[in-house]
Length: 171
Image (tube, rainbow, N blue to C red; front, top):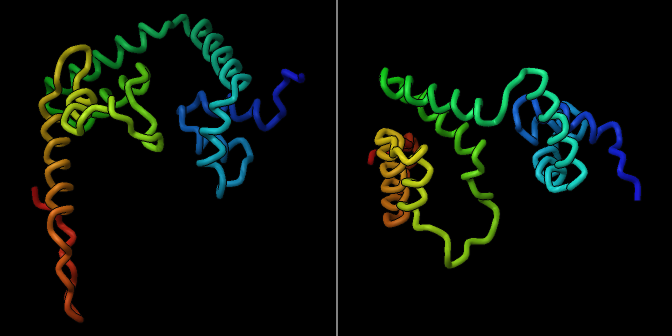
């Protein structure tokens, strides 16, 4: 069995390291934009691709003299600084990146099973970083969940001719 990657696969691996976005990496590597967002996850499931990405990451870390723990510490510091200064957008982004780096997010396309957390538990888990709950992130998540549940309970009101629909979601 050939363990070599083809040119597109190798390019995908290198492009993936730029932003860890499989779909965009596929497009930049020359895959069709129409299929990139399904091809990306498929490529990431390939053990040879995984091994090559790990190899490239290790080389980058050695080049920069940086370890995964350093990245996590930087993200945590960014999260704390942004939260302390009231910059909620950057705080949430840092929390998101921490979650990605720590593998805390599940694939939204997989089948739910009986052991999956409730939506409230999932929001709490996503908004907790290093044992600390981000109240702002948690508050936004709970408001979104409440709005979704409210929308599910109430049937849509018909819009009369000439009327502009109100698309504002009020929690």
